[in-house]
Image (cartoon, rainbow, N blue to C red; front, side, top):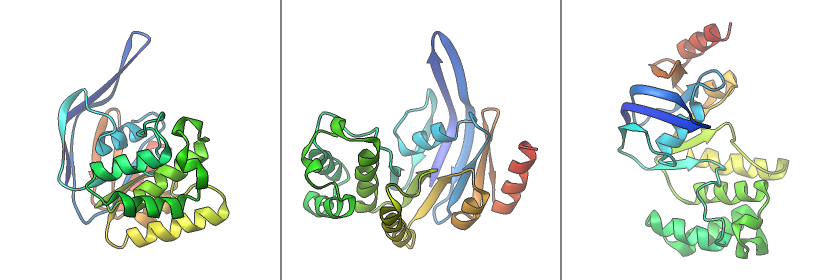
Length: 217
């Protein structure tokens, strides 16, 4: 279960405060995969980062009763001065996983080769995404977070990402941000729509898609 209780998120830029979420309340239940929808700027990525714990709410609290991944392919949580290898070991220990097992998986999956022994700040964005995606797949989560990106790299590597991810989905839920309604339907049975700083949960994904299309009409 993931619960937002009176969650407000405010960003301050150039002296101006912008409220992204305003006293939001909702509960995402275990055993259900959710889509997150909303027009550009509605706060979809912010909401996902809050769910992941990558960012903290300005006010309110978030309760996580299950193990949630960071957004797939998101490399922002790595220590850029540490090597890829050291980041893998560090994250594995945080999650109580065997560092040797996780490192072996990431080495094989990411295909970064000797770059794993180099600082992450020397990586291209694609290499960072490979490392992050590999880490996400190496650690078993109850819920996987996807912000548009279901795979990274070239066509061959994308196929590999899809195969491993579909295997993980057999025992885990998904929270997905996507502008593709077909993708939302494929992966999700319920949905959350963000509008004007508020969140509305729909128990039926088709009803959510209909409501979302009305917003964009």
